[in-house]
View: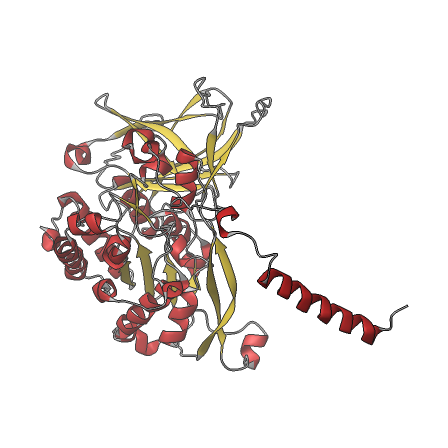
Length: 517
């Protein structure tokens, strides 16, 4: 039996002999060696380049995928937009919203993100980069920042980010195959936003504290664009790995903080999944402002979702902030009437004040419709659209959608629908102003008609393969449809409804905002 030392010697001799044989007569004939060829990865199929195939609401935001360098994908509409303007109604409503916040002593910082095309245009294919009118896009983006600033919003100028360059691809501003920014993009944005905040008069009175940021791990990212390409083409892309960061107070907690008596943050961050937990945008803001903040942003909440939930919360009612940082992207329309009707009503505290003119509790039976707030039942009321709002609260806080029909004295009616984010816990409250644009301002409410719970009809033409959405990151996943399940049992819904006069805000709906015209 060989000893360990002898075994080591034998192993070395064997390796040497093997090398000699390979170098000598046993060397393979080059003509007999196998040959390999590599095809370019992940060419987009024609299906992904046909806008008619983008049929769902989520897919509509990704029209139309186009290939960039390497694994980069872009959206031909959202990423390469050259016009950032909104409609006159959008400018008017944004100005009205600013004035409403200001009337409550709150200043708003509008963080309006630059597009992937502005920041990452160097990753476009040469022909697409030449076709992209970058000067026009940059000017339009800067003009929109100017409009927001003229309305009164504090508006950090993020346009310098469009001229950045890095020799380290792992520190790119955006992901190669996803519409979100990376932590590095969030950090560079936070630096600029923090400088704007520190120049605000309200900042001086905010308690200060030192924060520090450290590397916390790695994030694996299967991007939204890559996943959608996989859905259309059956291809797959390499998972992207990027650094993640965490921010914490630099000093030890004080005695007051240990016992829960720390001062509440006077800055609140609302926004989209860009401001959610993965990218540490809130942490970088804390570090660069030297001030604590409350982060209520949520993934899958869109333009207004986190703002609506926050304004309807007990936290806001009892501890309103001095500054709201509102992060949103150019993919959201700024003239969505439903957004402003909700936000302005909740800023007005809904029907929590003394102006309630009728309150009613009801049980909405399944598959029936119930008339509520019937004008004339207790005498005629002057429930004019220009001066009133409606506040609806479901006992079940998981109710995410309000469907209702508003009837008016002249026989006119309006179908209303408001949706809450499905990715977070919500409060079951729907508060909204009555419609007051154009001749709607002169309408008088006759009744509110609400349907009870009902099973939504399914489309019989469901494709064999369906796409689902991760509620946290809005990532598209491809899966076969599940086997049919019996419909859930419908139970009655308890609801409280009120109609009231708008409480504290002046009626600014008929004013004209010249800021964007």
